[in-house]
Length: 421
Image (cartoon, rainbow, N blue to C red; front, side, top):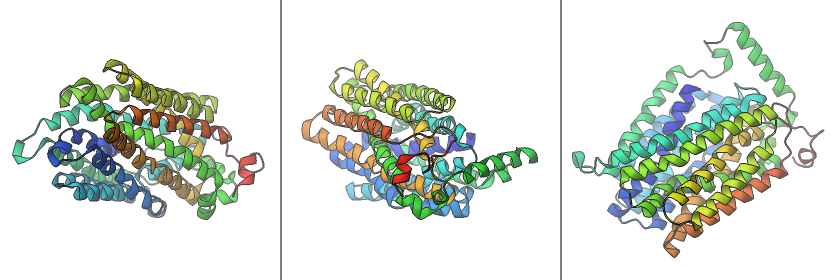
């Protein structure tokens, strides 16, 4: 878990560092808000197209080899962004970055289902996903400091940012290749009895799933999986609208230096980290999933909308912090719920489908905010729209029946599953 945590910090930072680079890059290259928003979001189109094939390859060849491959290639592409000179190159490299990273997050979620029983997954996934928030906490100040290297070695600050934040991903890929075990049976830190007990528990949980839950075709055709994909679509809309635009929103509101913006941007992520861990643990303790997703989503959506209507610096920052609190708190219970009705190769396919369809929201959110900013001269309407989308996702998840932590949802007891393939 510490290794996966570190890897995801680097992954998320390489995704959103374009938001900090934009503080200098947009002016240097003459990018409008629409051009920047499209380029930031096109990452997710490449990511989406190759998501399912990548996760199926991971299930076949093992997490160690495939996650290492993903990290090395995305590190190279991310560092290469320093060579961008125009919009076309920006779009191409952002798209290639998505292709390189495709399968990383759903691969990790699938990998965790091979290690942790269902009853423990919400807090485990929440603990893993706090890496996104730690990336936001440390990434802001670090990125702001790297921007201050402007002119060193003949490179602009935004070029140094892409270079020095891309190299660690490739380096960590070789670490993953050397030390990450593919399955519990390979875990050197467990005794033989512990390995047998864990494997037996996971196998028993898998046997309790319906036979179709392990089939790729059944997972891809499942109405439950598609409903979860639609719900998940609303999360990246908000998450990446926040990640890609927060530095510029704060810059516009406060007029602070690049380093000051980086420090201010850490606050929402600090607040979100606490909410993610607390909500994930409470969901596992109570065995309830749906309301642990719905309530934070609706509350976060309201906070996004109010932030769009607020003025000054302190109030919008406080509201965006509450929005991130609600957004982050959803993740553990959401993925715990999503992994209770698929298993084996079906889990690899189902998780990838949910993440693939959902991550198209990562294109919609940033592009929407940029287009609205160019049309109105303000971020207000874009933030209100993001809030409405997130609240709708929270309402929709209540249509998914929750079978409880660690207890699979099966057709005999779940009318929704009984009605869908």
